[in-house]
Amino acid sequence: MTENKKELISIIIPCYNEEDGLDNFFIELQKATEQIANTEKEFWFIDDGSIDKTLQIIKEFVEKDKRVRYISFSRNFGKEAAIQAGMEHAKGNYVVIIDADLQDPPELLPDMYREVKENGYDSAAARRVNRKGEPRIRSFFSCLFYKIMRKMTGVEIADGARDYRLMNRKFTDAVLRLSEYNRFSKGLFAWVGFRTKWVEYENVTRAAGESKWTFFALLKYAISGIVTFTTVPLVISSFMGIIFCAVAFLAVVFIIVRKCLFGDPVAGWASLACIMTFLSGIQFLVMGIFGQYLAKMYLEIKARPLYLVREMSADSKLCE
Ligand code: UDP
Ligand code: MG
Image (cartoon, rainbow, N blue to C red; front, side, top):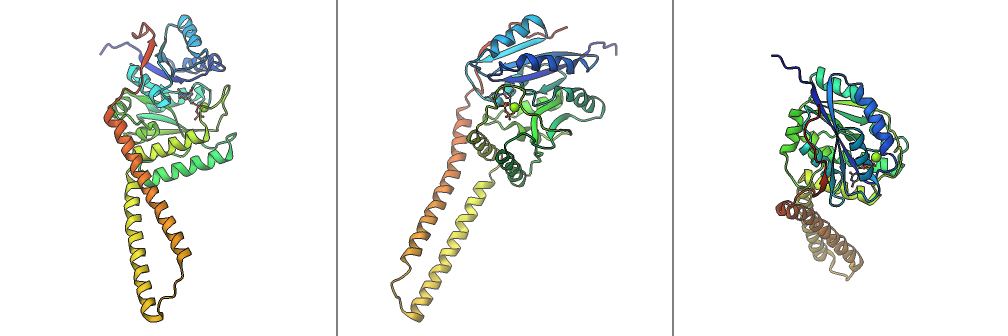
């Protein structure tokens, strides 16, 4: 074959209010990608409804570098939607997802590329080996979440895994085939299988700006991740029902026996009140769990688009 065409690497960068560090990030990213010889690159900046100057800065990039493309959402749809939009539009033989805040070190890219190109992996993903600089409480709950997730789903999501990843076309297309509305990328990447090389690195704190995650946003993300990925909580709910029925039955037997043997002094109303409150608490919990699944199904059935584009770069052709 006389194919001289260089392979294309598409780099997807979800951006939400990243005006402070975006310039610097792009310089670092360009530096790192230059290390990957014999390939073309395209940069897909996905502006996730930023309300600062992010879009303006991206447009300046477009002026200066003809490999830059962008999509700007009509509002903030979340990072998962931004990743999806990027993956749908990226045409590369290899696709990279990287955060805009330099927490995903661009200098890992040449290594990641090598693992996929030469060592037979389908994707190379970055994993933090520590969480230096992160609030303790956040680290604790994150670790707990991944533990629960691994136990419940059986899908291997590495602790400290990030969305930072380089994938080949096969892997990218596999992820794109999962058309669900409730997307939990880390889970989807693990679910599709294939061979992933974990590239480890020390945690880096944000270069500029602030994380968009509050504690409650993370909690919601965690619950949503579990609900979209496994139905184990429903099974646990059913078991809870069975266990409480069994306990109640034993209690009835105990009361009847006691009545027969010792008569029935009126006592125990306090413990009764406690038990009733406890049980109704459990009932609400179980109903809540059902509700979570119902809500997810509701959103899934509505099948709304994951994102709406307000504007995008005119030229989305391959660059030379
Ligand atoms: N991001 C996004 N949409 C959002 C929130 C975040 O596109 O609604 C982008 C953000 O600009 C950054 C990446 O996702 O490039 C990671 O965000 P962040 O740093 O806030 O998350 P963390 O690193 O704390 O997990
Ligand atoms: Mg970050």
